[in-house]
Image 1 (spheres, one colour):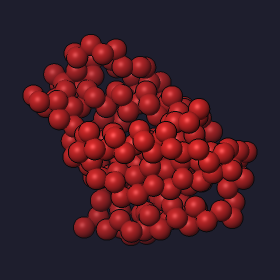
Image 2: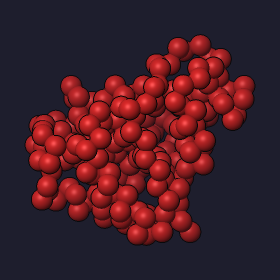
Image 3: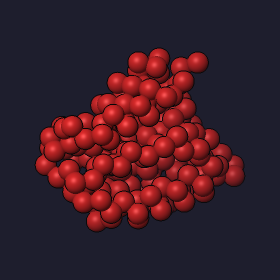
Image 4: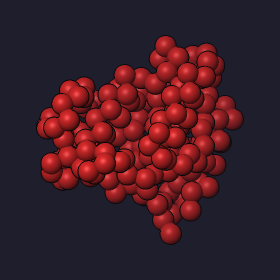
Length: 182
């Protein structure tokens, strides 16, 4: 049975190394019969969460703020798998990804017990160096807290400039991760 996959790409560079990884993941996932929708968060108008607990009143438009999250919410709610993709910024995910993910809390507010929808997930990252520990710590605790099952991680270090990723084994790893989803 095919899966619906959403990629939240927190890279500000639409043609950067993170996107090269998500492109290979998408290629593998689509070859396996899945549907993939990718959002390039850096080009979207997404405001930070206000912490107002005012969301969840309308499942079709869960947040009180009306911005480009309105495009993400319906795809997220229907998705079986959420891929969090980001360059490494100061030892963790980009602000673009963190801001969008925080805003997904409005969907949890639709549940009387503030439960997040159960999903599978993956983490895809590229970095100038190779210090992914803080990002992995965040991701591992996040999935445990909200009850998601991780399908895997693809972490590619030592790729600073766009194109530095060419020939790296992590491109194959991303493709294989996508291809493994059935």
